[in-house]
Amino acid sequence: MLIVMRRDAAEEHVKKVIQMLEENGYKARSIPGGERVSIAVLYNKAPVDAAWVQEMPGVKEAIAVTRPFKLVSRETKAEDTVVKVGHVAVGGEKMTVIAGPCAIEDESQALTIAEAVRAAGADIFRGGAFKPRTSPYSFQGLGEKGLQILAKVREATGMPVATEVMDLACFDMVEAYADILQIGTRNMQNFSLLRRAGESGRPVLLKRGMSATVEEWLMAAEYIMAEGNPNVILCERGVRTFVRHSRNTLDFSAVPVVQRESHLPVIVDPSHAAGFRDQVMPLARAAVAVNADGVMVEVHHAPEKAKSDGVQSLYPSQFAALCRQMQAIEEVLHL
Image 1 (cartoon, one colour):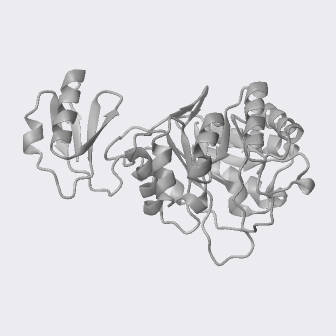
Image 2 (cartoon, helix red, strand yellow):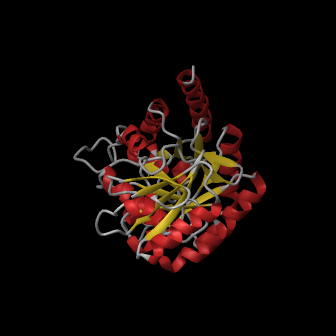
Image 3 (cartoon, helix red, strand yellow):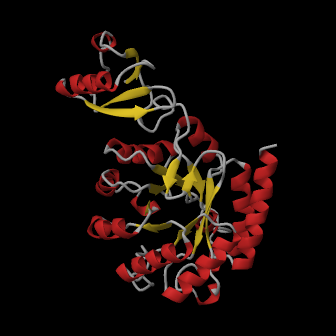
């Protein structure tokens, strides 16, 4: 259920409604809006009788929420959510560009790439300090040393940094360094990790699971928001199909579907979807065309020497050209 407060409702009215709901065994979450505050009722096993709520001071109406994802749903919050990451806004009118190497390899590599992508137009720097790899013999990342390098990148360039948090054991460490906590496709339904992310004050970038439906993806976001963190960014990165010409099949149809069902911003990762450099630029351009809120692209100045996913990483010159192309497409869409 969603309880909509009147425009002139005082803060004490909101607190009183929340107190009353929690005294009756519900969990209530306040949702500030553009014109008024709403209150979402969570963990109810059955429909809530609205009659005893509607008579309270400050309450305008009580509305049943039909979607299983409540806080994520547009039924709960009609206006788009804009997630603030330092001076960068993800969502809203301007597309956000996140770029950087798959993995942080050393300080020189990270700073070289960071300076290149910033000059080309990137807003946020990405780089993995902990790397979940299919093979235990592949490069697993530098761990805390990689996080320290990311902090140096932020200091040197002014760009916020995003990196993946793999498990609860390293969560506090990653949280201390990163501006955005990424939860990867393999962890989309790691519910303990989602709950911990919901307790964090950091924005969370939630990638779609490689075999997940849109509803399962949104329910994973609901886990984060139900614990109190409203700053969730969704990332479409392709789903596993029977094709062999790319690593995954990028589901562009998911972008307008998510934007219809949810108020959360949704970005696209063409690098992990494609798995091959020559597909990344066309897919990134298409992401802008379907009105995604941003793209996340892997870039490396020497991809032939990269310790992780060099074959799908753009050269800095290619990334610079892509940024110009994406800006041109964005301008056409806003005519």
